[in-house]
Image (cartoon, rainbow, N blue to C red; front, side):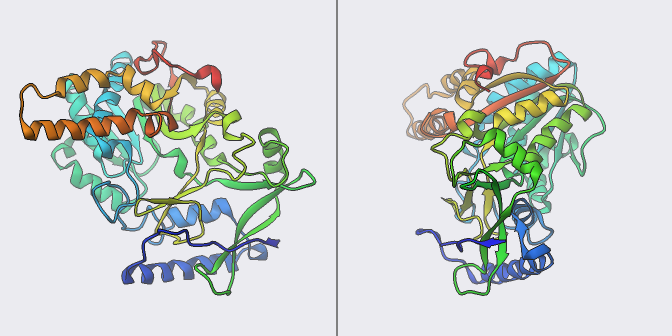
Amino acid sequence: MKLLHAPVVPSGLPQLESDLLEQINTNHQYLSELIAAQDQQFLPFDQWMHHVLYAPQTGYYSGGSTKFGSHLPEGDFTTAPELSPLFGQSVAVQITQVLNHCQSVNVLEFGAGSGALAKVLIESLLAQGIDDLHYFILEVSPSLRARQQATLQTHLQRVTWLDALPQGFSGCVIANEVLDAMPVHLLERSADGSFLELGVSFSQTAGPSPFSWAARPAPQALQRIAEQRFPDIAGYRSELNLQAEAWVKGIGSWLDKGAVLLFDYGFPQREYYHEQRHEGSLMCHFRHHAHSEALLFPGLQDVTAHVDFTAMADAALAGGLDVMGYTSQAHFLMNCGIAQQLERLAPTQDDDVATAQWAHTIGAAQKLLSEAEMGELFKVLALCKNVDEPLIGFFRGDRRDRL
């Protein structure tokens, strides 16, 4: 095992309150004991990411901290559904087409966050005539499940929370910013062309974190995959999201008929492993500050990696699914009628309150659609089974030829 550098606190990060300092000390103790029990006291990064995000009580998503919300100072990041109901209203247009084609009333959302998307989808789908709608949510976080139940208080009779994957499902499946939070393997190409697997070691040295980066020769299975994807550049570092690939492939075993809509930030494989992206795509979020120090604040900050959409499409095909569309979020929302929704919301008379609300709506739509904001970075991948009708959201701007 080779010890690498310790993390450095990026400038601008807010100070931790006393209660968070107590929590992080508990998390440090848990993780240090976990590392001490490993072979050579080396914890592979995918396991580190799993524990800091999902360990019971101490993990980011299983703990009780506020995670979503642009209007909450204690929130860490904002998702598209939190920005504006326009996002969910547009997505509902695509879901309606899928449900009508499948003669189904079932929607399944993975990782429903605050419940903001579910609320808008339920209300929009009811308005579009899906009267017997049944909305399923699979959520691993107890605190987020409670928040979802509060958000969906008026629709609880239509919502079922699941603890495991369904045995069979027909309808439409939604996953917004789910793949990026699945634990990734982190690898680096050595000067001799072989690969190192990066992980975490416990250190008693003074500093912002008792943990340091470490490296060891990567297992042969990871080396083979990295050799196929990474450019031949010494020191090139990036991720393999094999858990997400397995999850996507597994959808084919329980989806009987319907579509899966995956919303996330990422690239096709040749862009993901571009020579200039030599430091990978790991990103952390804490109180609306983004940085790349994944060993800081374990359990208190989100840790994500961009999505290799080519790998997801290949996994879908291996699982017996059809890849029915791939495009930018902006193209998808435009295809689903977001411009027409904006026209209907425009104020019809000179009213200061209505004008202010309209300005807020336009600002949110700008973030959803702009190439400099979410419009281009976020992509939408549609996977289908036993669906042969072209999907509305991909009528223009379909990029499957780039995967």
